[in-house]
Length: 426
Image 1 (tube, rainbow, N blue to C red):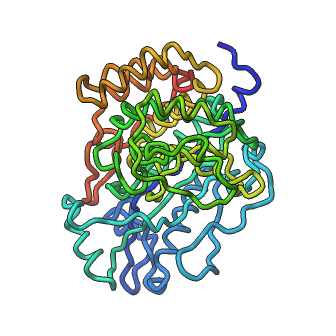
Image 2 (cartoon, helix red, strand yellow):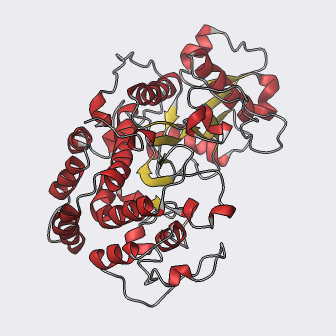
Image 3 (cartoon, rainbow, N blue to C red):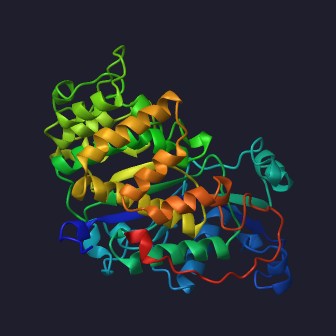
């Protein structure tokens, strides 16, 4: 099916959180010593004299290594006190520059993330290093709380999806990485430099509001009501009883949380969203006040247009951290598929008579989620992703290397690179 002009303008970006590791060498050791490198595969080796800035050095080394594998990536500004942030991006345009006004998203970025941490009580299979990492600040082995951010890329481009796949494959293949309950995978979907219209936003909000009951089961338990990705269907201002009329009150950027009203049904909530005439109303209804970020984040659209920042996207925040390039691309394809279907192919008969009915059954506990989820994903053009989900457990989607990350140093098997097929883009 040929894409129309507006549909081909859809863009997306991924934000992948993970934990990396470094090893400070002993005085006199050489970072290029092959024996030491073989003993610590995937670790960033930090010279003894740079121990005082080991974290900054290690992240820059990771950036340099990725760049040596042809990844176009931003540098870090080492003059910043505290956690390093990406340095001012190069003004030189890239093929992704038309997709976003902010130059930061014209290239890849690797930065530190304050929300990510190693958990001593949870990461018990890594107890050989968690004890020393957490209990001894003067450690010789350290961990890096990381976020790898893609440029804004074309959703309709096979080459762009291949780039995302390939860079994540390099990332997980070159470095020792770990994911746990503090790490997440976020996908932004937008329309290039344009804002979604109120009508488009309305339809995306209605679809995510209804499908939340089944999409939430794509993710492990610890992500379903996580403070960083709370479910809009349960915790949003719409779920708390706010109406479209109340969402119009004032133009202030502060949120008014309505309490004490009964939660609307799936159908009632969708109708309330349908009564919104502005993107500001929709963003306000879908906001989750207590959370650091809702599962489906419409907050870029709450302030009036004159007070908005540079991101024109909706953010899908509920996925668990993963360093599997296959799963990252499949989840991105689902997020794209939700937005594409809602804007350009919404079948309201399917919405009313199949999606709402089946999602209500899942919510009520009278039907398992598997079949309704498969029907929905096929309806939005994500049949391949549905098959992947059914064939892989939550743990298996964390990493292509297996259900858990092996903390012990050892050689990595070389794997044949797989090019993601066009079925991810259908």
